[in-house]
Length: 363
Image (cartoon, rainbow, N blue to C red):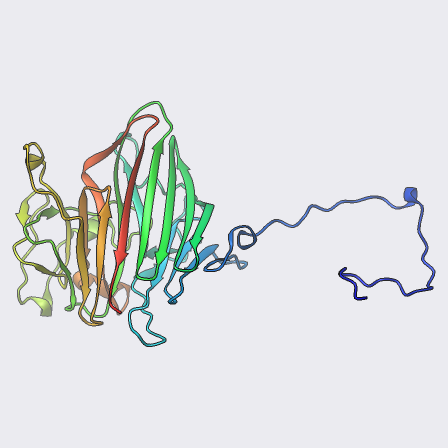
């Protein structure tokens, strides 16, 4: 009969000397640490923890669409949806860059920039500088799956008295990122927040957004975060349009409001805007709010993606124009739901929820 033990049994008839118990010291070695994949891994959810690499979780659904999330930083670095019927019809739609060679160790920057990242600033603390997540490190709290058509990972972190939960969910035709912020302190907190997505484009002239006609907007820098590609000051800096001067108009100064007059916003020029109800309008009994969804178009690849906001009040949108050449041959834009003009107020013991869904039907 074959042995199920991992070591060979002694041969029959061979002499085996059993030493006295007192002559052999008893030592016990701790069991090996359980890996993330052993604890949380399942079909469609794979944890990668190679030596020297950043711990990452990869989510995959039945049609082959996938998402990668770096665990310590909570940074979504890859989203490859299936967008064509052909077998290899997967396209990377996120724009991600290495972060100046820095490895992740809080409060150092994460090992990559761009992608999808959270940005939250504490407005209730006058001494707070930049993102309150810069010194936070995310850990895996739980995972869930519904067969292999819906998978998700839940990360958790803390920042002072705030308890944060970040959930990334993948489906065959969409990816969702949701955040829950709970105030465990004794005072209310005022936050400015956003979920910012850096979207890869095939060409500069083919990048655009549809669905913001009649919306009010003004020039505004993005919230500072350690995922940013363009800093807030660089994002609002004016540029020379050069060869792309046809149809170009200089952006308004910060604080000057305009109304989107066309259904399609071309993003070949440099801009940094927040689409929101102006503060003066918010004092009225009735006023127009930003739409809950809009579309990002990549005409070069003939793809479009629908962005849906939940919980957040505004929409942030920026494009780098000619500055994109500093970061590589591909073009990119940055957009996502935000609450930048009117703070998110979370009272003691309460929680706030916000989310972004990116969906498509390119198939």
